[in-house]
Image (cartoon, rainbow, N blue to C red; front, side, top):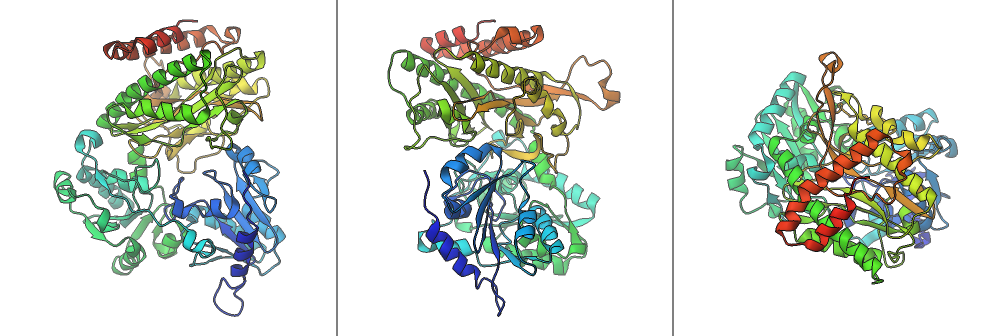
Length: 614
């Protein structure tokens, strides 16, 4: 579980002594973010620098190395995982706890005055850079961009190459809107904001806007590129060798012409626009400090990009695809859980990894399947308490009838992306496990049925999912809901639901799709999470309509039963019982005709048992 980082840290500290040009080339600390140059949540192997230097391979975290200390900041999803993976060189800083200082505050307190802190400016967003810089400056220290990446130098020849896989076109039957129509909307916003150009660095925004998909990052249908949008040009900085053979036809079908430039030329192209145009340039605060610094401060317009918001509000074709892909996915999930319950009941050995593989095989048999949307969290017993656990040979446990089994999984289909969690017990759960499960379910039902005013921030709704847990002093250390891309990233902004404010949240709007996933985790014993994907839709029969602001609610599109044997019915209200029974009736009416048509009587019998009213 723990990999020694002693030699890596020693080599890094040698490089820190001469990281800057000139006589005073030493830096007192080096920051290693999780990000790639596009601030992606997940990285290709080439960009897994924080994992390489620290040994911690969770998707979120930042490493800080000084001459005599090594620290890792990560959030509550990863506390247990980090404790298991970090060796004795490292100190875990539990981000999100009131007792944990920020990176900037810790450095300001622990470094001598006049110290320099280095970081690759491509790997830190402007939004993250500024508060660290401010805290360091207050302590008479400075944050300095180090153009050469020190981790890459330590890694050397063993560092995997940057991926550059073929791009595919997404036809209008799946994308729903041409590039030209998307450009028309963005062009209007550029005019309204009086800006000359929009710089897009987020990979999912580029893929969505251009109706293209890739595979440069596992599970994420994106490709490495930058996009510059002006009123009369689309400039795509990308490795031209990966463009699809039908790219010319794709441009014709989408009524656009796209200028192709080298991937590495993005800095030069931004500088050209700065020198040849007079108005401001739009760049998101989530873009890298490196790209942002190329634009003079007086010329920057820094807001979430219009592409990001447009992408979050699904069009009619995307909506239809989301619904249909979740139905196919629901069939695969039912087939897996029916099979798994039977295997466990008959004493046939199934472990976390073989179970995960079996689920993938069911999904792979479905129409329009393109791959998984993330590594399956197939977690038995204590492994379920590790929020973002995924099985490995050294942690693999048998799935049995004495422990809770948590399965969080999803798939990429040409017409949608899925993400669903179900928690099951194939034997007799304890009274506390049943209570915890029921309180998680109460929160999920409450959140999923709430009515709220249009454009309310997601953070406002978070307490609804936690209240039943909070009533008895329980909680969970992750958000309640995240956006979901359309055959794109399984985690999508700019909206979200959680305790923390989402700084770019434009407010929840009709036809956004988000997750509904409260949970509870008993450290070292078990984990519980129940997750659906929900569509935001207009609410019917609301008397006052929030003074014509508009009333919204959620429509669940995930189609898979929630295990009722785990429920303590006396804890559910009459309304909650009706909500659950109504959902199960919908699942039955949606999936049973498909299973009957396919002749899958085995799964059909399991489904009928699981959707019985309580």
